[in-house]
Amino acid sequence: MRNVLLDDRFRRGLCMIWAIAVLWTIGGCRSADLRTQAAQGTQLVLSTLNDPKTFNPALIQEFPNISLFCFEGLTQEDGVTGKIKPALAESWEISTDRKHVVFKLRQGLKWSDGQPLTADDVVFTFETIFDPKIPTDWKDGLKIGVKGEFPTVRKLDDLRVDFTLPEPFAPLLNATTGAPDNIVILPRHVLGETVKAIGKDGNPRFLSTWGTDTDPTTLVVNGAYQIESFTGGQRLVYRRNPFYWRKDEQGTQLPYVDRIIWQFVENVDTQLLRFRSGDLDAMGDARPLRPEYFSLLKREEKRGSFEVKNGGAWSGTLYMAFNLNKARDQKGKPIVDPIKSRWFNTLAFRQAVAYGIDRDRINNNIFRGLGTIQNSPITVQSPFFLSPKDGLKVYNYNPDKSRELLKGAGFKYNAQGQLLDAENNRVRFTFNTNAGNKVREAIGAQIKQDLSKIGIQVDFNPINFNTLTDKISSTRDWDVHMIGFTGGVEPHSSANLWMSGGGSHSFNLKQQPGQSPIQGWEANDWEKEIDRLFVTGARELDFEKRKQIYAQFQKVVQEQLPVIHLVNDSALMVVRDRVKGLKYSGLPSWGLWNIEELRIRDEG
Image (cartoon, rainbow, N blue to C red; front, side, top):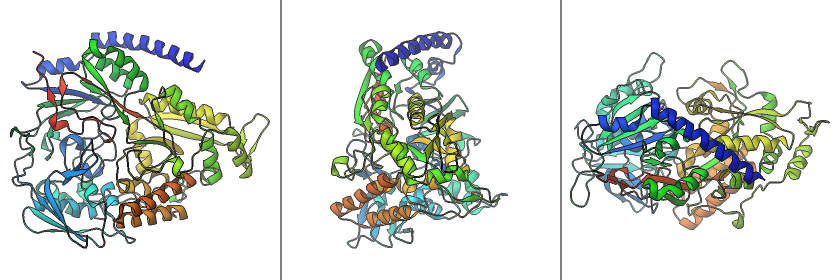
C-alpha cells in the first residue's frame, strides 16, 4: 500500500511539474536566452539550491561553493582513485623522520590578474589560517598533537616551501588538497593587508573582505574559472581564467569550456523541469539525484540525449544531530532550553530516538531502495570504514526498545500515549533541515511520524539553507537538525566536525574566533576521547594501526550518538551527451571534480 500511495503522489507531482513548465516557458528567464547572449565560445549551465554566503574561501562552510571552480590547493585528491596527486605543487619531499615536508611549486604559476603565484602566497595562506583571530574550519585539519600545534611554514625560495612539523602527521598531504573541504592557496598581494588591518568591530578586515557584496570581477583566483558576474537569487557566471596553469597532453591550455552559468534554483523539482526542457547541462553534480528522478530520467535517456550515471555509494553522510551545548550566552541565558538540554544530554534518550527511526522504510520509500543505510561517521569508500559485521553498533528500527530505554531513563507516558519527562514536561522539539531539498523534507516528515509512535512530538521546520547554517555555526539557536557532510577517504578531513574545538562541531560548538562570547562551555568525556583518537590517528603512520584507532573512533560515535546517521544516497547524476570528458564516481563530493577537462561537443 505504501508503494501505491507513493507512486500516486509522484504522478500528481509530475502533473504539477508539467504545469509549472508551461508557466516557465511563458514567463521565465531561460538559460537558453543566456546562451544566445553569451560571447562566442562554449558554455556549461549548472544549478545549485542557494546563493553563496561569501566569496572568501577561508570562511566558506557551505557546499557547493565557488572554490570548486575558482581555487586550488597544493595537492589534489583524484576523484576516481582517491589518491593524492600534484596540483599547484608539482612535487614534494618528506624527510626520513617525517617532520619536514618540502613542497615545490610549478614554474610560472600566475594569479588570474597575471601576478606570479609564489612561495610567498603559500606562506601567507598558512599564516592566515593559523592566526587565532581568523575563524576558518581549515585550521582544524592541521592541528597537530595534544597541544594542537600548527606546522611552521617557511619559504626556501620562490618555488619551495618547507613545512616543519612538531611530530609526524599523516594527514598533511590530504589537508592541502583544496576544495571542497581543504586548504586552497590565497593571493597575498590582494588579501595580505586585510589580515593585518582591524575593522570597527575589532576583528581583522579579512573577515569582511570578499563578501557577496564585493564586485566579483575584482576577485583574484588560481583555479580554472574566475567570476564574471553575480546576480543574487538568480545566477553566478564564471569565465575561464586566462592564466590557469593546467594544459592537456597536446599542450592546449585548460579549461576547455569558456563560460559556466551557475543558476540558483531553490527547488529541486524546478531544477528537474529546467533540465528536461534543455536549460541545464547536468543535475546531481553537487547532491545526488533524487531516486524517483533517476527512474524517470533513465527512461528518457535516448530521446533526451543525456546519460544517467550511477557512481555507486556516495561519499557524503546524512545525519540528524542533537544540540548538546550546555553553555550560556554572554547575558547568561542558556543556549539550549534547560528542559530540552536534559533530554538531549541523556544517552538513553538519544539511543531511544535512534531505535525509533525506521531507516529501512526511509530507504525503500524515499530512496526507492537505492540508498545505503549509514551507521558510521566515516564514508563507506574509505579503507578506514568499520562495518557492522566488524563490530560497529547499529540501531535497527525497534520502537519497543525505544520505549524501554525511555522508561528506564525516567520518562513516562500519559493516557494519550504522549511522552513526558520526570517533571511532566511534554517531550517536544523543533527539527530543522534545509528547505528545497525534497529528499530531506521527505525524510524529516517520516522521522516526525516515526517518533510520534514513541510519544515524541516533532515540530518539523525546513528553513533556508543559509539560515540553517547560520544557526548551526553561529547563533546555536536550534534543537535538532538534519544536514549532510561531505566525505573522503581520510578520516582526519572531518576533524573540524568531530574534534571538540572544531568550527563545524555543531552538536556542541565551542566559541569560535570573532563570535560573541559564551560562558560555561564544556566537552564531554567521550568528546575528549574522540580528540585523543584523532591526535593519535594523525600521528600514527602505520596503516593497520591507524585503522584500529579510527575503528575505535567510530565505535565511540555510535555508542554516544551525538548524531544519528540515516541513509546515504547512491551517487546518481545526469549529464547531457554534449558534455564530454566527465570522470564520475561516488568518491568525490562534487561530480564535476575534473571540470577543467570537460568539453562541449559542437552541436552545430
